[in-house]
Length: 282
Image (spheres, rainbow, N blue to C red):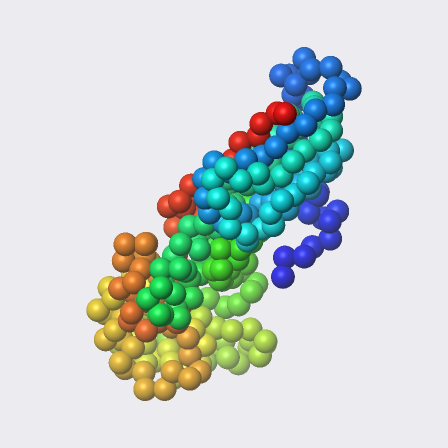
């Protein structure tokens, strides 16, 4: 699912490293150019790993030999040695912060996502936890990948993945859901799904009867969602998504309404579990 050609991924990673290096690593320049060293990356907290592939590629691209002890998606405990490094000491220290930043940010997303997913599963519910398109510009591919390693759903990657009508689109059609959906159905490829955001319970039936594949119940309370779902007798061809101001504290209340998907930007924008790693020279 996330397999892209190695040269393509490396090109992306080099851009981030180049931003950090600037016009040169002044600090590491005071270490002899041919000095060889060894180091290890240690987990300072427990959780789910993400970003290991990126960190390994960054070091290997700098000529560093890497022994990777855990893979993305693995559970790691505080004190575990994620990877062992051997090679040019200047390069190890120059790459260090960029590699650790990938590990910390992506592992925090994966671990926070997994925490929400586990909360759902522990209560014998099947609701999917999904990300949103509220991402860091230019970094969304990595963030969504981390959501995947936390057993979450990536949702849309970009605007071309599927049709999603928000209130702003609907306003152009003067709130006429039927006209909007009929227009789209006549022009859209069969291969693309249609999702529409609903903010009023009375509109849910119109959306369901006019071809919506997914109905997003936005900024509704759990009670409003429960009432809205009772209006739909046949749910076999429609998925229902709850979104808007949902976090760990109110997650179960929304999951118990019977929605199929809960989307939240929290795990990417503000992960509630922060993962940390450190690099130690040997």
